[in-house]
Length: 442
Image 1 (cartoon, rainbow, N blue to C red):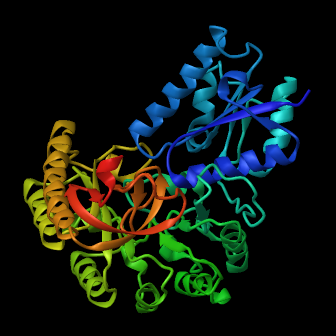
Image 2: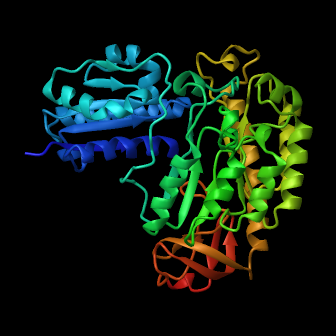
Image 3: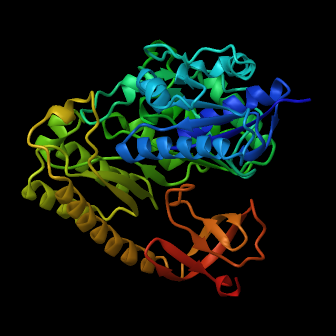
């Protein structure tokens, strides 16, 4: 009888790619993927970026263990925690969560079949991980994807070289490692050959791609130009760029490559000079503003997406007001705000003064109200325009300014074929939601 498994993947798209790799290896080894309620092996791939993500991972794991205890899933089911939470806290979790059968770090993905066999036979270790992750998997021959058949995430690097004061990712994922460009292109070629219409390039920082191997001559701009030459009708979307590593060559690639959607995801976090310096963001306000203006000028039709952290240590009301004015001035087409999360083992956690959690939340809400007002105006400006969309589901599509799962949607005629491009006319908008002709029929 074939062994069965299920994966509950939490967190970001980068985590989802790791889940796909584990599923791919287990499927190739003869395992069958089923729903969690029937699985011999349940893998919970966790996130540990902020407190809410950690709590979600713990709550999800405990819910699965309670289901096993209650007989809602097989009592002999083995539960394995993988991912960032497991990598960072395995020694603590083994004592606080004894109901979990094994904790697997982020660098053990290539060994998941062996680990699965050991855990299922009851002879495995409690912890599988190394102190510092150095893994760079070969993603190029992956067959399995959790995303719909018309879009996919392609991870171009692992780890991060930025020691941002509020972030623990380098401690969890290790230093930056770029995939060879030939390996990335092989994956993109395979995906587009089977009809994938949107390739989303991801990494902790996509703009740093190739800079860890300068002798290779490989850069993000070179990768975009090479991918742009591949056959097929598809979008290339770039996520998670860093303002410090944008170059003129990269801006030109965005402007000149017709398959690269005119969408820049550039998490800025803040704009006050002393906050950027203390948080080790490697950029100052003048650099950021100059870059944004240049992107507006040199990439026609560009949509800017950013994220901001409200209530960073040392943030004053004046700093918050400066950030609000910045948001008003630059009118980001897409944006999100998160209250600061005090992460242990980070420099920011030790900084004083820490902003009260109620103040963080209040400031985040104020920023979100400004962004919502911007979104209303930007959406109304789209009315009567023709926009090319990719249809995700009956009646639901995304335009060039909408990345999967994080941005808005365009409501379209439900007769449009799912997984295909279509040109639609916008007739109405509400914040980040647009409505095209025929949408009222849905």
